[in-house]
Image 1 (cartoon, rainbow, N blue to C red):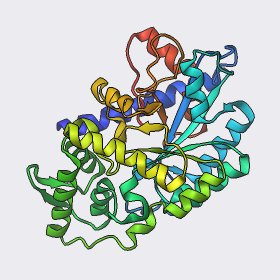
Image 2: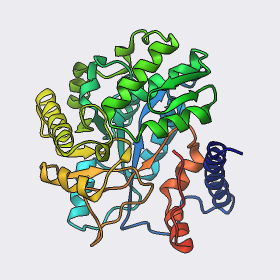
Image 3: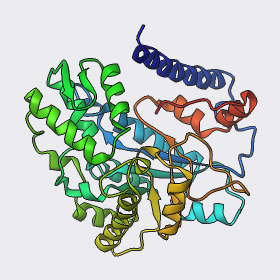
Length: 353
């Protein structure tokens, strides 16, 4: 069996492990950890795309980032009844001050700036009057750059492309999701300009035409300002959605500072929060974000957020949500049980988003 196949099976095993544990606690009547007052911890949830389930059949782009609208509606309704959903800025202020948090404190975030955040997530949040923070890859707002590169790679399967030639990576199969996902992982080792160039060349060689109406995949600044007026806040997510550790110091500085300036210019508000694309951060990168003047920065390690001496506001963990997180898994991730299990075994139980 190939290494890629083993990776795929391992990822499936981790997903199955989480599902098993979630249902075990549910059957025991302890899914939500109600026996614990649940103070002193919070959970920050990271969403990306939100689309109605009817749109998911044959979806041509990268489906792993999608939360079905119906799932989001159920999750938001549950949070409204059972959690204290607070603005992300307020949560980070409380964490920095080491203040005791309300039981089951939650903040909501959305990454990248997909237009479906406006069309589908925004109405749900507005109906329940809940705050959220959207992190924008500012160079993609309005869609002038075309699809994100990973969505272009995902398109190849929908175009019935079996294999593509990638400069420096050879002839690669993309007809199975496991092949595609391995290629995406390999591409993430490169600077973003190289990824974009090589993916674009591969599409041309494979005869794949540009995606129709790609600009409609992204928020516009008009939509951003409308959401901002309704209480949704916006943070910086670089200009190009580059993985900062892969870039030069000069490029990192520009990506961090320019994305902040753009958000501030377009919204008329201070941009105080940053989010690392793909959760890619190091201590050195975190210190660069701190030096740029942000009040905090978010990663994607699947951990609770706990105030105290070890809290670093520039490496704040979040728990990702997508179509794999049905209500049982969703409630399990919000409960104290995953952290207890990690402490018991002394290892990090990996969450597949």
